[in-house]
Image (cartoon, rainbow, N blue to C red; front, side):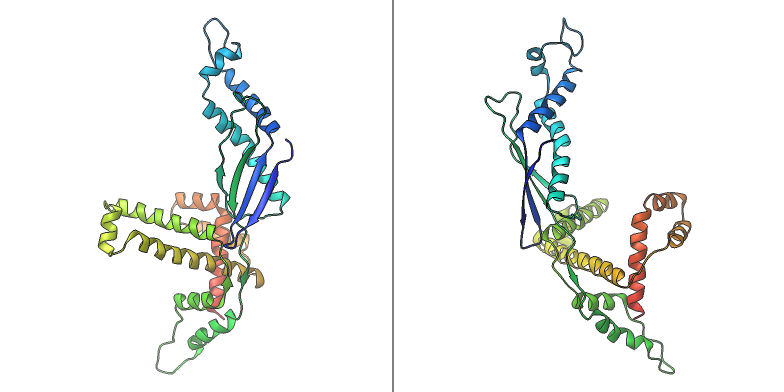
Length: 285
């Protein structure tokens, strides 16, 4: 494959926009390869399967499927080259927008390059500031023992609130949008299970669609901010999860299906356990 051209633009909201151009020579070469494979399965009366002249097979082949297959082959390679060229470390799958793609098999004259844009982002920079002092001002109450009175427990919500108020982080808009969409989709699924329409649900809650999205957007931003803040704290405090802890969590599963699911997702389980250990660290400050 020839060298693709990739222009990078970092937007103020943290989104990274890559405009990638795939050389026409690669487009034509890959198109011919995919087309040739498709021809092998075409049957034309009077010819052995896959042996008919091209002018008799072209009309029997779905060009859109050929285009999709060519994209499947070229786009991942081009995207990977682009992020390596610019030294980007994406944390999400890109949102891809493909421009109108010329069909090199029917084009008159020179084949044009293909172009697509990819939207992604890197992990946000997190400044923890004086989070320990703010949380200690809360947990200190729980350490005071007054004879004849129950010990004051610090609520999880209070610790999270103090942490989020201390931490500064610019969360990329694309991350917030993705999480907002996920939360909305989950709510829609839950509403359907209740046998309600979205309009009925909104009516029962007294909310408008834009109100619901704004609510979930705020939640999404806080959830992502908390996730990266906990990750930063875990790194600074060298909080790790041992293999033994992962195995214990798997053995503690209530059903065999749950055990299999945890075993198949050990990395995710380790992340959850590390997050829980970090929250315990905050509670014990």
